[in-house]
Amino acid sequence: MRIARVEISNWRSIRSISFEPSQICALIGPNNSGKSNILSAISTVLGRDWVSVNSFSEDDVYRRDPENDINILLAFDPPIDYRKYKKADPTQIASLSFEYTRYKIGDSKGRRRLDQKCYGLDGKPPQVLSKAPRKGEQRQYEPLVSIPSDVRMDVPLIYIGTNRSLKEQLPSARYSLLRQLLGDINEELNDPETTITVPGGDAGEIAVPRLDRFRDLLTSAFEVLRTESFQQLEESIKRNAIRQLGFDPDIDPNKLDFFFSPFCAMDFYKALDLMVREGDFSISASQLGEGIQNVLVLAILQAFAERRKQGAIFLIEEPEMFLHPQMQRSVYKTIREIGKTNQVIYTTHSPYFVTVPDYDEVVLVRKDNMATYVKRSGLPATARRREKLIKEFDPERNELFFASRLLLVEGDTEKLALPEYAKRLGLDLDLAGASIVEVGGKRNLLEFARIAGSFEIPTAVLYDEDSSDIEDSTEESNYNEKLEALVDEGPCYALWSFSKKYEDHLRKAIGEQAYLDLCQKFPSVSKATRARLIAAEDHTAIPAPIEDVLNWLVGES
Image 1: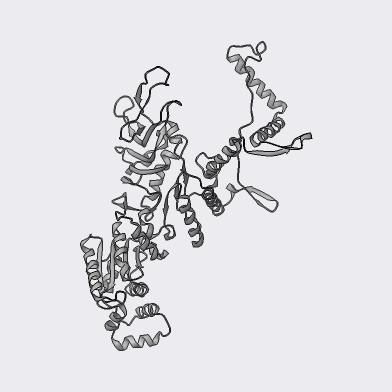
Image 2: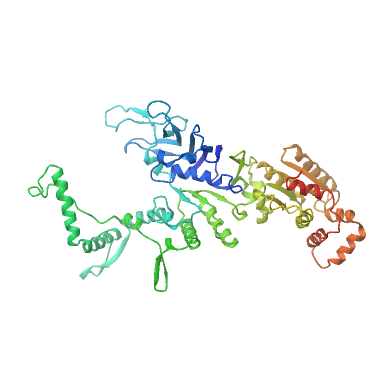
């Protein structure tokens, strides 16, 4: 099961958004843009045992405007099968709607209420049997006017927030990682074919169902708890219950029996805690610091991936928290593994948790005029395009998704030199949220520009008109025309060029002799490093159009 469409309006910073999350979906945006609000809206209606009007507050309403009503609609693929009665045919529920609104008339006018509705594939309330089917009776139907609790329970949602509290993932929490994992183990325990070997007296060792053995041992353990006070309590409850039902407990003591029973195996699993032992000292892991709790939550997440659990919906806030780069890459691999059979929607600030080849999995989250909005790429994600991007894969290029403004350059020479010119001009690229991304050659500029432009990221391209990357002059001329045509494709594009390759352009700008002197000053270094060192020289001229490009990059032109 997966969420196929999300529609949210008037929820916290969200005025109105609608998008279709992919199987693996990364929500990317600056702080306070509304990423977490998207996940919180979903978890509020699906990630708890019971949702009611008290699950919301006026602080959740967009701009706290009493005239605004919160609407959250989630569509599912495949639809949820619901049976009001066991022998009834399943009714398909395609989407669930939650509206935090107000009574419009009557004594309750103005008071908040929560309307919960189901919709079928046709967008209308589904029809269900009005009463249990009986043989020989004509079946009668009625619209399903609310959301049955069974329907919400059928959506296996797991939420991992920025508060990496281990308690929220222990089996005692209904919507937790360990509850999901131990649920499968409990099913295995209930299988009669799952046996354990026990002493069988004269028969030697015999195999018995593991569940039967558990019950026998639990019953024996329970007898230890049945102290005199415990039995008196049990007897008191029994006698008072019989009396209130109209019987005499002295005359009819066996009319009804009430007694305590030890819990079932799943209840036992639910009561488990995760402990940490160091030497002779043991403590609940939930009492440890946030760092170790985060490690354990991620370890459970990786165990989930290893067991190939299917059909769950994960909401994860900032999986990169507390992790060094190598571990970030490891956790991202875990997310991709889980995403093969489960849906994962997560927020991130880390380029280690997105890749340019999978740009179709990215949803940019931005805020404009105090309201959150989202943007997905409309560029077709063809197999050919993806293979080309995989060939040019470089983790540093993933930074383009996080840029408020983006400059694409051909290679390392420009990437290293331009930040030095920015320093000399007093321009802070990082403070402006700007990124310079090299694309591995001139031939890749167009592809990367179109990907960035498809997200409406303001994107500039700086290229060499006569580069060494394309040998055929006619082919290069045609490619230059395609680059120049970018500015006609949308207002987010800007374009600058060097008449020759960067080194020749620089030589001409600062003068032949000055260039040769600087090359002698910085011998035995790479071409890209020499360009950076020359750019850092205060007395050298800044070649045109670099100053214009950098001013654009920080939003000053």
